[in-house]
Length: 564
Image: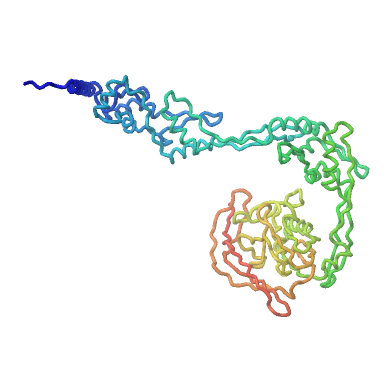
């Protein structure tokens, strides 16, 4: 008897046979791991195994992988080399992402067979963040810019508008992500790298207003000041040199005049000097060891920077004859008069020192000029005295001439040569007066006419001689010179009964060498050993030592220099 087969069982068998056929067909037609119709940036990798697809991607996309990536930073365009920036295509990972997610199981294979294609797959990009950051930081150096506020400046009497500039800074952290997504992107164009902008507070509208309402009227003509029956005319070019416009703390510009600088300008100072006089300090001298007044101080008349500023500023927005104003003078009092000598404690000789030198015309002139400028210096308690500030630059215009000085370890010719004799004399005067040196420096090599470890040199703009008046009373400096000597005396009130110097032995002695001198303007030089030396400054009161201070000096060897 034949067994009857249930219809549902028969139908199931037919379906099983059909699915098997589809599976077999799918394996034949779709081939490898990757569905048909799969592309990566136009490269067809459908039906391939993963390794085949990775190999084809590396080959077909080689040009795109190495092509520079165009970028924009603000309004600038540049390019980044992918390799330098740590950008690369991961072909194997891309093939993995394109492969059938279920591998070769029947459901996946039959699904791929029945679907139209695998579609476009995004390439997998790897980034070495350290390299990317370094490349972006190089771009930042090129294109970052600081914000510049709008302003108005004055040049040779003409106002000029300074346009504002928006600040720009490349956001390196966020730009790394932009590089990753833009590299090998479909239809790749320039990658817009993110920047942070800082807008100026003073914009173009404000600079235009300041130019129109103030700057142009300010430079429209000269300003005339009257004082003491005299007229002082100030040209736009001179005014503009000391006039500027500054932010007012908000979004506006306000004018500011440097009245002190304007008064010091030669064109103005020359006119002002006709109606002004400097206060004259009292002249002191010694009678034995006691101070007496040789000539009383006298008041002076001056025009102050504040007065000039207050008068000139309102005139700058006016025109024609309205640009005229009157400036009052004020009386200035000297620090030192017959009545104030005793009050300031100027009663006795604190110290005195003399340096002798070989007579020479340049030494006589330069040492005499420095002594003249120093003589009569009044240093109030807790004030700091400066050699360079008092004497000024050693130029021909200031009364100095060319002489011999030490430069780079050898004698050379320069304006003001010889003034170190005055510096050394001042140093010893302050040393034995017991006041505090603030800045000083010895010569590079030892000079025999000076005391070892108790000498000083000066150089304009680099080395000064300064002391702090910590004596508790004022100090008056007497300085005088002859053709062969200079003497500096400090007057005031002694803080210590005596101040002594105790020199130690020479140590770390080094021998000099020999070298040729310059072909032009050569100055011969005798050899002398270099050494270290320490000098103790000893302070005594009532015969007892109350304090000691070491002064340590290192001298380099003085090489023998022979001239051709």
